[in-house]
Amino acid sequence: METEVVVALVSLLASLAVAVTTAVWTAKENAKSRKVQQDLSEAQSKSAKELVTLDHELRRQTREEERRNEEAVQLARFREPLLDAADQLRDRLENIRTKSFLVYLGSSRKDTAIATTLFRLARYFGVLEMLYAQVKHFLITHKPQPSSGADTASAGYEGQCRQGAAASRQV
Image 1: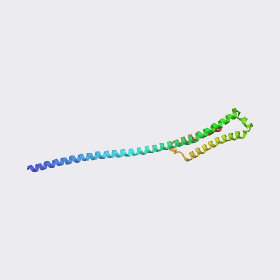
Image 2: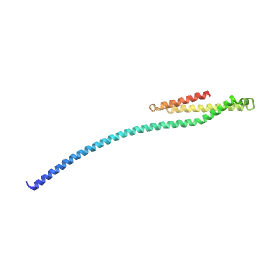
Image 3: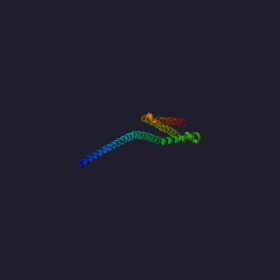
Image 4: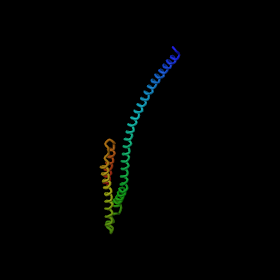
């Protein structure tokens, strides 16, 4: 055989070896790439599910916090007027029971004494009625989600209002 043919055959064999090696290496790299893409896809899917779960939880917590803040605002809205009305009524009842308020009923200030006593009583029950109406409206318009656990909180809030009403009626 001639040298040129041998060189051509050696070149052919070398080219085949390089081509086979390249094909094997490329196949392995493609398999690795597919595996990495599959892992990445699974990780993205898992992350997306976790993101949806976290988003849902964040929205639930936000709604719960907004509900609590709204309850606090409503409570603060009626707390001071109710405490003031109750304090004035308590003072008047204390004056009637232990102090000399009844003396005013025999004087020229009788009408004023009766009118201011009735005013304090009416003011207390008026503020209390406004509070009951607001709580009733709040409970109707803010029906809790059954799965959020707000049923218990709402029931507790309503129960506290009822207990407060019962306590105020005893005064």
